Length: 163
Image 1 (cartoon, rainbow, N blue to C red):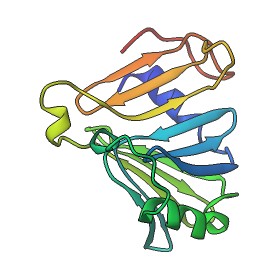
Image 2: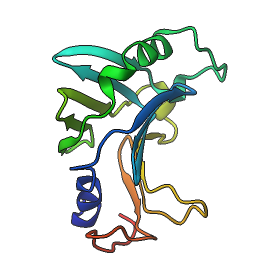
Image 3: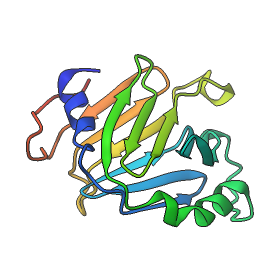
Image 4: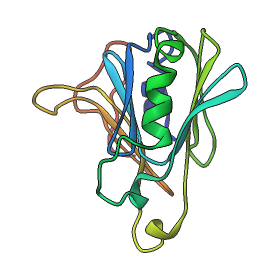
């Protein structure tokens, strides 16, 4: 990951987790002004206890069911997970993402290389700046590459081209 993309990810440090939810088998995290969509294998851990896990979004059957472990656990543990502030962010050489919060919560986005990824790469996680006109900065992580579009520069974040 190049310097500008890494600096963009590091913008999470100091941000508070304001909200999270499960949508279409994707975990959505609101760290305003940034958002994280975890579309690959993901989990939320607190005090070394796995609270919420999701499967690879590419395996989704296109049927939105709220009667599953992802939705149940996201709702059950919601109040334990939110309101923490990001104290560190780690990215592995293969682009796994690990976010630690000051309330002992850890968010992990794990890169998958399962059946849906053999023919074409699929999105694993996306960190972005939501804007009404979709002009915000986007970092899209696939199973073997990343795509970084720094169209709208956040404060303290250097400009960059596509990685």
